[in-house]
Length: 148
Image (cartoon, rainbow, N blue to C red; front, side, top):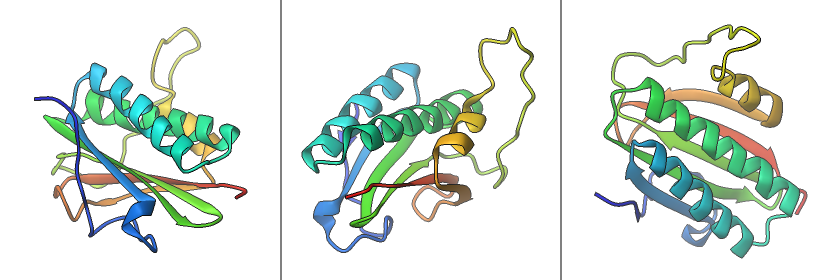
């Protein structure tokens, strides 16, 4: 199954459907790359400043990677939306029905992974995790101020 754009009127509280973009993709590492490129292109189309766009793409990458590596999901739903002229919201929905929290780890200095949530916390203006109304799994979200 390949990634595809999908509408989702229930999520991303935006003023217009044109200000939200959704992508459903396989929960494989290759899907993370697809999400980065597709979402980056949409942010460029919306004329989001490059520095904000770069941070958003990094957040999408980290949240999608967590969905791929730490959940039993076969598919992920990634969304971005311009909530208003100052705020961008990023969401990644999985099919992990087991819990509503994210496990934090303390990576050692020489570990090659385990720092994703530290990156999210450092870059995002706000972030959190909720139960997904669409998948029944988790919806991990982050916001960035756009400066638009």
